[in-house]
Length: 317
Ligand code: PAF
Image 1 (cartoon, rainbow, N blue to C red):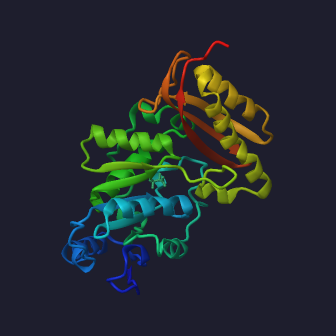
Image 2 (image 1 turned 90 degrees about the vertical axis):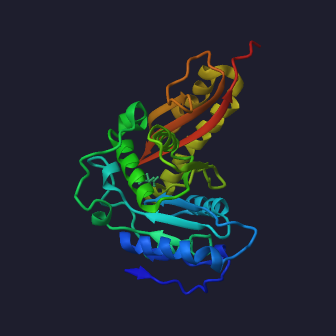
Image 3 (image 1 turned 120 degrees about the vertical axis):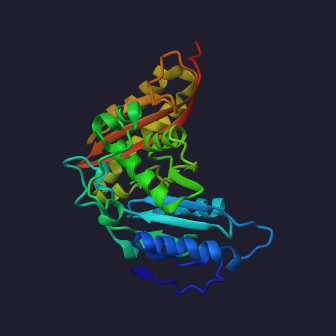
């Protein structure tokens, strides 16, 4: 099945309603058509052929995803092609996680994408992505997949990388954009692309937040009003950590921990200050750029957030 756009072909890239494709052959047709005519339809003689940019999602789109798509449009250029994939990947959900209840609303997602610069939505079914059932050969995130998120969600990052690599092969993008909110996922994807020589440029996009600091996430939809209020402790803790950047690594962790200790109804899974490349916890005498990562359960909802911090050794006062 494919849904045709009503938007005239010469509409500005940012005005277009995306074409929805569900199968591999529909995706190939959309790529082929773009290769033959896309750059000409939207011809800007000085713009060059443009790039193919992809934003991979599991749907339940929010403003954070839409920001990724806007950035993808900018990366692709006016005559480039922007693809959004929507696929809830069972491989990255553990037993007892929310695979069955994960919000799915393809029509609503496509409506949100109108006007932000997406050309094509690739929304495959399970058998399109995994035609032979569960893949026998998978990507391993190595040690990156065993710490922090990996400790709480064994196999999660392996499942993410396996589907990301498959989608990269299917879509063949020049650029792939990922949100910095899922920091460990972004690090793992960067590392996979480097280690396996995947010919894709990976671009990280800053976390989008509500005015009160809550990081946008599809799982925020699970929060009651009271839980949403409690969930603000995560971003408050990160801000407290950042404000203690000149008190050394231990000072940063202590400041963030204090906020979490005082937060009711927030069950912390981990709080860690890590090297942004290796994801190893930094030593007490560390100085330089680090990532402060937090994961916590608020009610039954597990939330993650993070903040980059330029840590300097404690100044003796
Ligand atoms: O970040 C997500 O939504 C998913 O982990 C991704 C990258 C689409 C892979 O399923």
